[in-house]
Image (tube, rainbow, N blue to C red; front, side, top):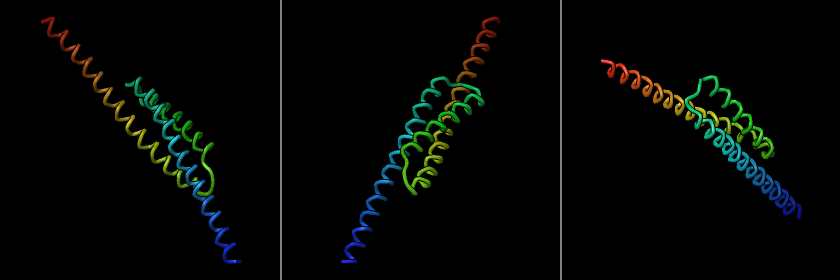
Length: 122
């Protein structure tokens, strides 16, 4: 009987751990989703200055962390929080690459336009 109670208690504890992990996984995915939504909005305004990009990243990351904190539960949340931070950094790098690419494209258009005007003058 004591063994059965111990097994039942362990079963409840294991089940609760699974529930908390699932909540943390959902919190992680929602935090990433919030950041992605913000990143898409930011990307639409590219190119932008490095300072504006950094400000937008910090605000999007703050929102993502807040959503995560509201939804995450239990001792397991720390490892999921670390995973969130890694994903946010990856998404920020992607956004920075997009911004740089957009900057190059605009610079090329400006230089091409200037060059075309100069050629027309000759």
